[in-house]
Length: 477
Image (cartoon, rainbow, N blue to C red; front, side):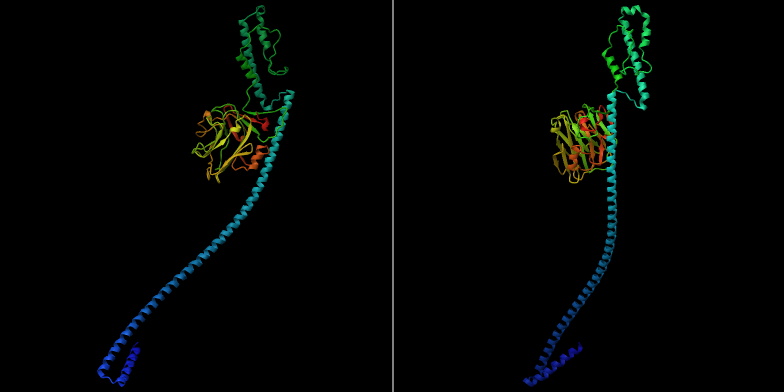
């Protein structure tokens, strides 16, 4: 910088020395002009120096910024490389897990197929065995009915003998009543033989081993000498004797039909008979739902002779007594059936065509995936809908009852909601049946696999409900 300044001064001096020769000016003027030019050059040089300094500072600042940017970029590159390494390792782990999951799913699918085949074989063999047993029982019953032979199982001989002994005691009491009444209305022959009454009573006693020679097993043989003129027994006594001679039937009845009429629907197995409207007539099951249910199918044969349907199915939990209900009520709208899934959500199902006293097949199907439901009568789709309890799960552990609507768990029954009629082939699945399965079920061509509840799972029959075993619908009367 010092050299450049001295060079500028020398240049100015040379210019000044040359100018007097041109114009021959005085030394004072020349000196003034020289000083002015020097000042002007000094100012220009200072401005140049300031600008150079400013430019150098800007260059230095830009260098610092670029250096920081390079450092930041290098750190980002290192992070991206580490992230890529971790991503590659995670991808390898995921691919390994997916391959193991695919192999496991393939193995599980094979096992499931084998189990389904085994289950189908077991179901077929069970059905064949049941048909053989029922056929044998039917033939045996027909043989017994044709020959009128009384064949008592070996395990019931003792009980049968006790009943006969009790019957002998009852007949003794009846005979004593007859003799006492004959004493109240004596006749001439009675006065002539006053000492024969004891002998007559001894002869009229039942033998120790009855039912050996008489054609009627419960007919009491009396000798011809015993002809007392006694009044006839009262109807109440006759009814009591008949009740002793013909004990009442048990609740589970095996029906035989001889000769059998042609039958086409032979997949019902059994029937429930609800004879009258009562809060005591209902049915409970052995087990409840063990897991939550998000799909449901309820199908049954129905025969209603009343003016309303009543309650078909009621499932109550501690949290909600109307978790799952199919019920009607003796009210103004007699032909409706409410399908409730998680009270207060419900749909109304029309039941007008069922109230004719004939057998009809109904199916109610629901799925929580899209909230869809389907309602069939005699394999015809009557109504359908969506957005009905979408995403809802029916909780497990509740109480399942047929014939009454629960206002509390296993209680709170209402007479106006009782079912009166017949239910045959009732079944419940935890999946949605397809239309083909509904059609085959309604035409007697088998039962879809995987039924969660049937009438074989009935635990207790309350009140006057009867469980009748009938292989075909035509025999369920």
